[in-house]
Length: 237
Image (cartoon, rainbow, N blue to C red; front, top):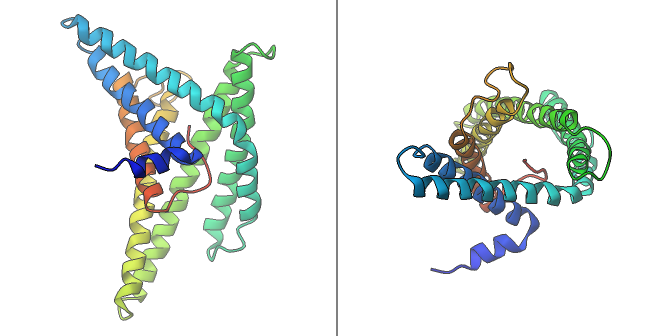
């Protein structure tokens, strides 16, 4: 079996990040499941602990790499602007808000990271919370955008019933893309809520394996979309 596709994926920054993200959450999923056998299987507990530590290191790696994402996000936001290329005002409005949330997310996370690394003398808790809120806001806006796009595509599909087969096939592909985006964002939003302060919905209630499962689902969808040429210009924690 050729490893060329994997090599090409790892040679690009976005591709490498998605592979690291998948490995991070996959390790947390397996590590969390193995750790549940702690009372009966010492070897499983040890392996599970190592996988969870490995997952934490990969997560830290991605946090450090995101220190250099501000300019690429700014370039993406600038190219999108106020969404003049969008046909629907609702999609345009939600997309602009999402870009603002994404742009603000990065500096907040950078400050939290710098505080934990003792590079600056501030408490990191509020900055981690703010970055999580911004991430969750972006995910929620992404879900709303995809649902709006799906509604518009459904109307186009109905009006294209008498048209050519290629047109209907293209619309259906777009609809599948948006459905996958909704599933990915819902999985990530579940984790974002889990990392909120205690008392907010199901915050703090997910076991490690469930956090890993949600993240793995989102990561695999991201890899599928990238392989299909559908990945966007932003990043996911």
